[in-house]
Length: 310
Length: 178
Image (cartoon, rainbow over all chains, first blue to last red; front, side, top):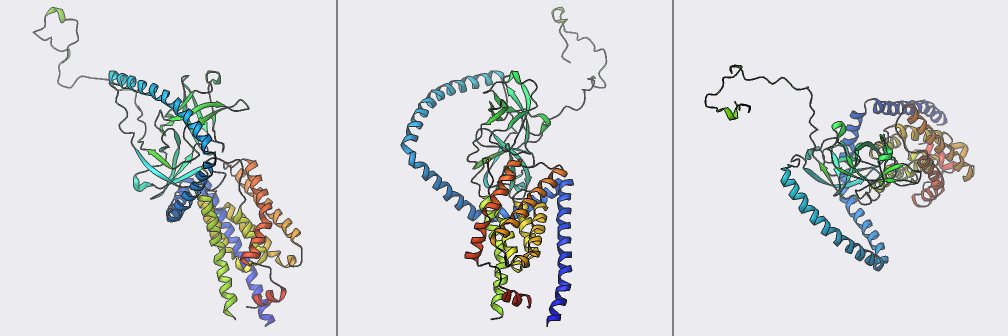
């Protein structure tokens, strides 16, 4: 009996070591493959997430809902204070609303005058936030829409007002949105009114940093930051936020989107910015038309110097 | 009599993935979309270490493998790296189960703290070597210290609620002789 046992141990220990060695080797190989061929492994990850997270949705939604309810309940404690605040804000809002209405009318008039057609292809799909990244090191959320709904990597996700992030990784019924605050996020922007272009790169703080500014003197806190559409990843002109300066004097962006509660996100359909590839061909007349053209007979002398509309 | 410990072992083997899944679920709830200035402890890692010091037979390597790989994929970490480090750490502790049987909790805590530190340092080193973007150092440090700090509570939870205890020598022989 005792011999049996020791023999078993003798076989078992090297086998276990072998198994652990092989497992670790596989895992390390997996990590290296992820590092080298990132898109394929990320697609695999998106598939796994797509299988797992939507199945948890039926219990996630009520839990999230009730926790949010509790949090709201806590805020009842300072209800009267809040009420006062809301009243004064409402008064300010009324004034702003007047101004906005006037501006809207003016804007409509000007658009009409200029015969502007706003981009008709910029439509959107709205998705519900299912889960967040779950780790303090990454900032992303999962939406409940995926490639079944036509989502593609790189599209912009907004809440009602400002840019929130970019789609990165789509499953059949889920898609990951990398938030602007994620360290891996970098978005080309333009700062109005000075027209300086810069890069908004996240660094795990609530207000991402402004990098690669050409001339920081032209930029003031409070300037509007909108996407520039450079690199044809994003449609141009989406509102990102306002310039702000932190304590060390570094320029950052105060995001317009409400990051405290991301619930519904709209994903803008974007089919790439059109690029002019050639330098323009030579414009030649149709074959068969004689050059120089014959002079029309019925022209009188007054319209001689006008170009003929042939 | 013979089947009861066996069923319990299998029950506890299922318990670890189930607990980890619950922890993952809590992490994934979309409550905090703001970036935080602190990091919560890595409960799954602490649980795995505590179990492998107490009842290695409840925690087969394959179970750690699948659970941690799932966590890597779901939590958007570099896949495989943390799994590998956790397996290595747990195996290191499993080989030290025998000498630990008589020692006090403080020395156990110390060795666990060493393992957690080693895992964090190795993780950051490998990420640095492969030039992968990673979280700020302070966040990793906070997470490491929180994990070490919460370890006694995890052990208390394991011992009192889940009844994952170290075996007495006679029980150990019984398990071994199966």
